[in-house]
Image (tube, rainbow, N blue to C red; front, side):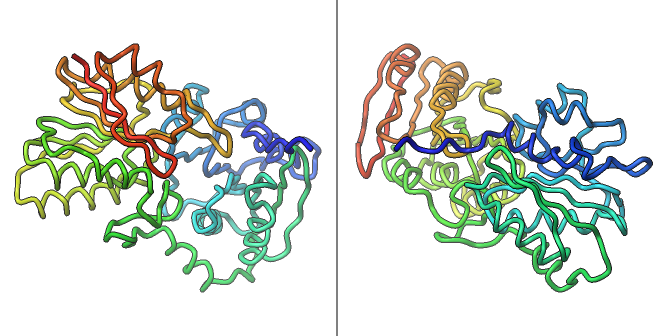
Length: 351
């Protein structure tokens, strides 16, 4: 039996706007609309109006929204909206944070409308929305579930406060600071740990960590490489930047050296600046549940463009990912340093 195809991001957007398209719900005449975890797409362009406020912390998606002419930002603390749209993420604590934020910014009698793929926790998300708001209505389409509720007076204030607190950075395994929803947010990722264990101690000068997450690899570079004088963290998810700053500040303090740290909210595939002496990376290779190895290849291209002539790239990847041809085309020397537990650690040298 062939596997059932998962819902696509476009399908999730189509499902989100289904109640508006069918007339089950209507856009507010005067009230403004807040869109949490907003994505660009045909349904958004069909329904969006000048008063919409879109919030998106993932840089590539935020850039798409800007190119579409949509207004990005965060609502003020006392700002209220007649309609709040939500694309809840797969990680349940992060989704609960978004539902709590929707509740805080929803005006009395307003509607919160959300959609999630069936294979990524749609039923759980719907149940959570009902816990916070009360009775929920729902529809199904495109392997997704869309559900909505209105802001009443019966909202559980204690539950609201509990879910808002879930977003606070917290200590995890190894003493690092992280928060729900980040990559491997509550543990040290096995691939990153393998790379960290095999990094040489002679990296020096300026080092870039691409797709840095909460800063695990960069912290190891600071701890292990006394010749490193500057570290640049590049991360597309803005929610990771706060924890990364904390982890790097602690690593620098523990090293007893002066190390310049720069944390960039940045899409690595758009290129890097300034040039660097070394790059370390555990590049992303998937979107949703599907492998997308071109992301990793784009990270390799960006690293090659940013490295100085003597520069070195240290990369970890799932063993099956086809990065060798790209590495051979951009680097003079490519060596697989270790293959272990389904991962490979590769060193590539510019000259």
